[in-house]
Image (tube, rainbow, N blue to C red; front, side):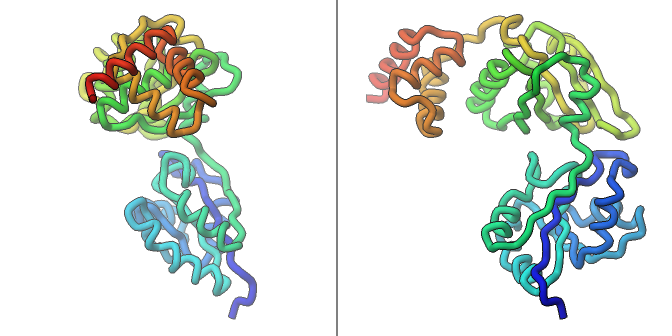
Length: 286
């Protein structure tokens, strides 16, 4: 019977090539009593490849909250658990944050086991001089949210490179959005570390022609200074009002005037234009 509390290990797994895993990660996966996996089939392939027989439990975005109590009980009994996702690091545009927060709150040890990263992999071959970079995860699905998200993305790339992920079925829509904002070359990485890995450079317009039927997983890198090379995108009154509401909700801006200034800066407008748009929306909505 185990008397000590167990540890939750947050283990990074390969983003494609199965050899991109650390010796430490393999040791942990062999030594823990349970592997909590986003997809048991994907993780099962990895474990079988390295002849690891540790039991696996499904823990994904739809059941993560419900699994917490069960996993805490295992930790309290002295069992250690390895948390993994399909690729890369749990909690980074992947499930895991809910469980990690609950485990830490319950007083158990959480230990990171770092490894492969699509973000760092893409930046390493982009050849873009940048004082750091911003990672933005996946673009929103809803059209209204996407427009504001891309405006903020390009604004963020003024000073440093911006990296984000995109699904194949939304890549063309993303390139169309970027075409309105960015006129310089960007990099699109496809299927990083896998057999069909490729890195393609070009303007969003050129890339629309290159990727006519996108397949695989994509990582995009926007170079620093891209906002200054692009063309302004006209923002509607609703766009201005929505961004103003988001900034206010997130506590950005000490006053209405300060928030209006932030909106103006992000959208390339004057503060007066922002105030006028807010007033028109107020009148329209009664």
